[in-house]
Amino acid sequence: MPPSSDTLHSLQPQLTADGSFTFLSADFGEAFHSHHGARQEAEQKFVVPTRLSDVARRPSLALLDICYGLGYNTAAALATIWAVNPQCQVQWYGLELNAAVPQAAIAHHLLQAWPAPIATQLAQLAAEQIVQSDRFTAHLLLGDARQQIQQVYATGFRADAIFLDPFSPPRCPQLWTVEFLAWVARCLAPAGRLATYSCSAAVRTALLQAGLHLGSSPAVGRRSPGSLASFSPQDLPPLSRQEQEHLQTRASIPYRDPSLTDSAATILTRRQQEQAASPLEPTSRWKARWAIPSTYSSIDKIL
Ligand SMILES: C[S@@+](CC[C@H](N)C(=O)[O-])C[C@H]1O[C@@H](n2cnc3c(N)ncnc32)[C@H](O)[C@@H]1O
Image (cartoon, rainbow, N blue to C red; front, top):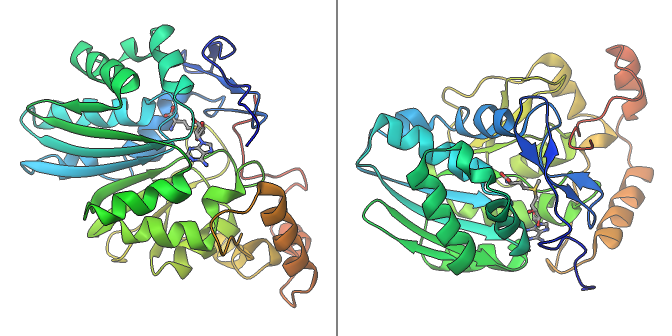
């Protein structure tokens, strides 16, 4: 893998519409969060749909943060959990490729938007990749999530909530494939919930193929909803007719990475070939039927 251009010095705060900051990734050509609001995205796309304020009433819970990044999703989760139940013990795993990202967030004081004990513990996590305190047991696994997820599974860890927050499918298809999401599903507890900002039909198909039921999380500050997945269909907000029909189009052909080692280019080409040979309805026809602008995209992380 070539050396990363996203370094401690190159990652500079960029303002988003809710007053919180994100970074721009030179490696992936995309912002780390929605330009509508980084903090709002963490709360509304991840913490609220996984119902952490309810789960936090238990004495302990398990949380898996895939693509930890600046740490906003985890910071927002911890703030919600401990506001409800200050004694709740949080067992936590995080996966992240680039240690410079959480370290740059600390260097720019971006975690200080959350209560001080959370900012302090996440600073320790960024520096040492481990925190062991009375209510937070945390391991940040650095490296490619495609391999690290298998380590998480091997420990027996099963999450009550999973945050799935890679860069968009066209930029980082490696983390949206049938094979990767099958490993992610293996790490989800029977009644757990997975949340992601993406409403891509390819991502939703991969979640279905992993044995999960699908729901739609509300559109907040943007046109498109996110996705929720769980082994139980109970209480999942149903997909609209338009979203269900999207899953019958060529857009629903998922990304595949049989060996969990392919490059982004190889995964994208494999999918394009499968789409070209597919008997499914062209996605342009679905868009025309629902009067969806041809510029529509399920990505909004591009600043
Ligand atoms: C959209 S950002 C995540 C933002 C983050 N959840 C937050 O709250 O700040 C995507 C993250 O995925 C990481 N990443 C990219 N490829 C990865 C891989 N193969 N394995 C693990 N992490 C990866 C990037 O370094 C980046 O930090």
